[in-house]
Length: 385
Image 1 (cartoon, rainbow, N blue to C red):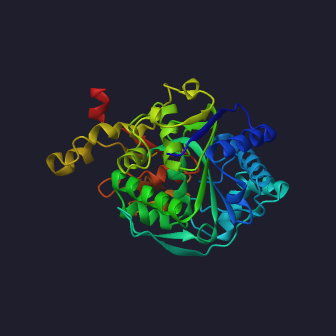
Image 2 (image 1 turned 135 degrees about the horizontal axis):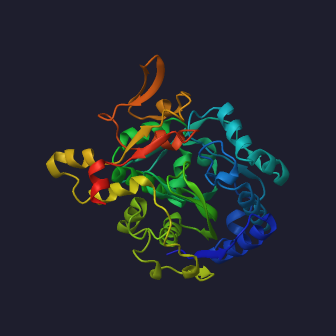
Image 3 (image 1 turned 90 degrees about the horizontal axis):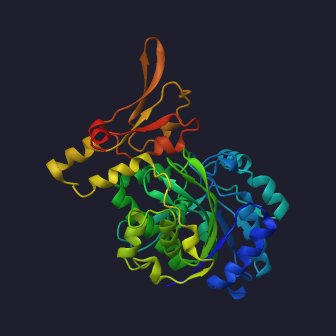
């Protein structure tokens, strides 16, 4: 099992982050030989065009600190690439670079930004849920992937960290198609672990976690910033996620960690990992607000009761707040099953979700720029709780 390097970090001072990450890279087992004369691609989390202060995206200071640390260890040219939510076009790529504070940082740190939108198939015959993936070209061409994730809660997978961040290598709206194909969260988690395994087997991967200020509540975009005060580095996204799950107080409940544990990609208990640096026990937060959708986890014990109809009836469902909605249509475009349509009521246009066909992927909530999509808990569960 790969060691996980963990240190406290309370602010986004680039020099401090550079110093911490350089030591973490060494502690995690990264050598100059692994980086020298290699194509190194930085893959952050830029899920939507949001100011870094919202804590929905990887902070530019962490990317800058990582770039400096990597260069000091032999990395020459660094390329930053990401496929965010929505269409994978040069226009949207530029929008996200500008909105997330990436363009200015990249110019200052001499990081090449990818604007191309080509992609290629990568095969993974050993996949359990998926045996091939369409992946953005810079990732296909990379020798080394530096997976710079954000530690956040997530409405579908409960936590977004190392493994979930790699979903951003799937081009644009093809991610919507993947949601439709793997509509059950358990199958979706299997697919995500297949993707991470494929990349880990075919490339050198370094995962760096921005946990200085993360997110709680209805992440990955609609939650509340939460200071966790940590930076982590590991050669395995699976091992790093096990530590992140423990720090958030989510032990044993994150679907991707459950899958990776079952596959033997990480141990079942953090005590079986070698966590280097600061004492991780000092960074455990037992009061992290989970996403509203986490209530669905109690239903997983009865997935087939009454043919699955009871679970479907009781599951939390997305609902559009008409007062906040600006009718931009982003939610409809991001819906894998096309269940969102425009209706007229009282002479006014409203976006409505057809719950009958909704697969509870919560893409609409994730991509809404106005946080107008809420999670409505079933009234029976509210009474029981």
